[in-house]
Image (cartoon, rainbow, N blue to C red; front, side, top):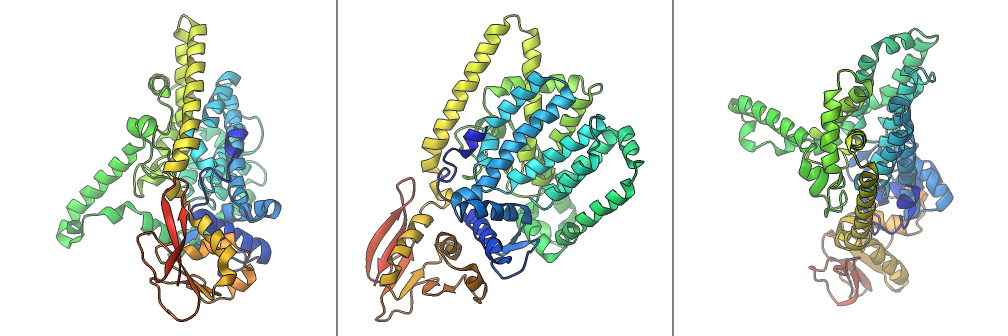
Length: 499
């Protein structure tokens, strides 16, 4: 599992995408100055591109950059570690809940090779740490409920910290705590009677308060409003006399959004349509798991009333899409990632159900091993060969190459102008160059100009000075093309002109 996540992680997927360079630069700025890109000291919320990022991944990346420098590897390494640790914790969670080492280890293997999990633990996605903290929190809580160790409050603490890692946690984490407490209510009330329990609860509430204030502040609502499914509300339903139809539309849309996360097409065939979220030549899970999933679901529902572990993971299965349902588009593999773990559990229940009842166990195991090996090799071929080329625009391939070329040529020019079509070029420039964060923080508008680097909507200020223009291939600038920058797929990404 570690090898699959660390191998060529700095280069595949090709190049850092736009949010990764923002995380990388803010982490570097924190590391060097204790301030973010805007000069705010040790913030809990990082303003970025008019939005706000949560702090856990950025501070974790700052630690990574301390050891590995301001590199693509450093930005993605925290995700790799979080993904690897998630698998270890998932195995332990299943060991204590199912009492089966075989089921736990095989389930760990399924997550280790999962296209869904690999997709988000090989890049700088905040969701990787959020999933780890959620899983770790549930594991510690379950340890206490099963009377193995007194770790309930540590588990709740992990879920509280998950609130500061990714946005889906604001719904998933408290909902999991609530339902776990109901499912194991006797153990829960016993824990509340422990010494210092009230003090610990008070501390946890205090730790939660900053996030609560953020969630309902203007900064916190920017993300919620920007991604809300209500953006798709038809204009005709906004009129006062259409309130009933609007409410009906909202209920229908919520139900539709929720059900998309259980779609067989999404899970086993086509995956997520967003280029960074799926290889798109297969589903989020392997096709060979589909029939086993059906058997597993039947078996889980059949024994749901009598098996608490089934209840735990079926509840998790139903809770997982809640946060994603409120946003758009749907299905969204990144926001729906918490659903991978209960799905894996259900598939493993189906696998062992078939194993118990099939007459030729050796043939079944050989067939299963062949399916696992074949589909894993197929996925790796798609990921490293097809996907690396086809999805290069989704990963902003070409930006790094353009910036490095410009940095090499800058001494020969009086000014370098970037087209507005090179979106957020200033952040790529900051990450791949050697600017001092302390000096950048003093600039009034680094998104418009950094020294001789100027970011315009069109070429202007044409004088006798030597100017280098960085433009989209469809744009035309004065002078002649000096260099053509290609992306990983061999397509033209940018043209570099000189006057």
